[in-house]
Length: 128
Image (cartoon, rainbow, N blue to C red; front, side, top):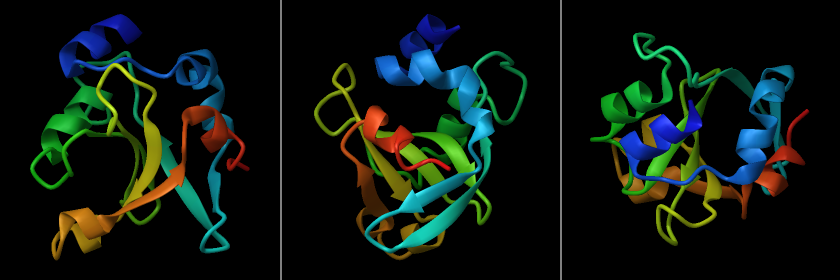
C-alpha cells in the first residue's frame, strides 16, 4: 500500500511514518511548542481505499492548487488545516513536518506554512 502511493506522488515516505502508521489514530492532539498550543487532529489520511475522499493521494490532488509545492498532507485538524510532509530537500529525502493554515493560504500560500518538526520522529514526540 505504501509503495503504490509513493509511486503515485513520486515521494519516499519516512521510515518512522511507515512503522508507526497503524498507531497514529491513537493520537488526537498535537502540541505546537512555539505557540504553546494544542491542535486537535480530526483524522489521518488513509492509505488503503482509493475511492475514499480521505485517501492520501485524493486529498493531495484535491488541494494541490492551494498547497505550496512539495507539501503532501497526511492529517486534517479540527479546523480543516493540514499537517503535511514538506519535501523541501527533495521528494526522496526525509521531509520536514509542517502545519498548513488553510485560511492563511488564501492570502499568501508561503505564509501559511509553519514548520513544527525537522522529521517524522520529532513529530511523533509532539503527539498526545
